[in-house]
Figure 1: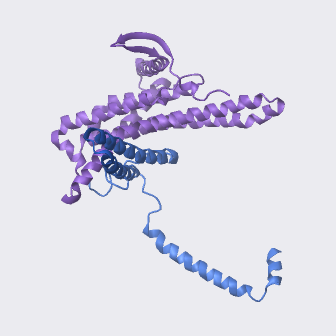
Figure 2: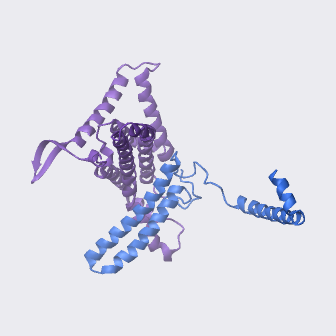
Figure 3: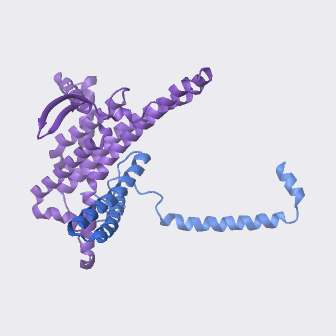
Length: 126
Length: 249
């Protein structure tokens, strides 16, 4: 019914519009198809230390890993500042290093980077 | 409104001793730790008292938990990791029992205090360092020096690796603590909605059905979380122990 009403409204320019739209959709579909296989939709389960069975636990684990790295870096820098009297520099440098360590932690927890001391193909297994 | 934080309050039950001006008190936290240890011990002793080839109900529980922890440990730390089975099994059973006891209304949740989880995480941390150095000597430091890294960025990488290593006990302990704390606060808040709405009369009682249902389903979710966090704590312990046993490769 709704289709019929629209047909009466603009019968002359509708087919051209629809053809253009379907062509664009096809192009988009092709492009998506060429992009999708390139990136893995999900990290393979069982690769690396990712054994958390639920998504909430997994997400929470990743966020704590990042925060823990930053906190340790900040603590280290602050203590270094107090001991050596180099006031802002220790905190600045170690906060950045701590952030990097946090990112490394997250990558390891997600199983996309090898464990410490390993340079293998990302599979943390002996 | 009931105070949702009140359930985490530590109460002194008795004073054990005074050491150097510090009071060593027996608190409700200690009491529940003792109860948990007692429950685990009773379960294990009771399960193995009458050993039969076809296990009974209690014996199945004990055997299942043994198999579960042993499989977890073997799959992440190798068969050499079985050396640490007593530690890992104790950690798992203790945390699981403490979490489950905390779900009973009116009880105290030991793992909702970060000092407890931090102590457990630091125990694992120092075990890893101690055993790693004892077994591998200086080679344990290879943990911080990935091979195949260009020499000019090596100092940076070593710093990052050391910080990453030091951040382990923090994420290890905060995860368990925060999950327990958040879960119990949520439960308390929803449960207090029930009594608040109930004070409004008949319409309030009708409205209270929704938070009551939510509280019930949240309790089920919390049971899952209690088990899951015990498991996550255990598997991270295994992964860290694996680093102590096989640093670098």
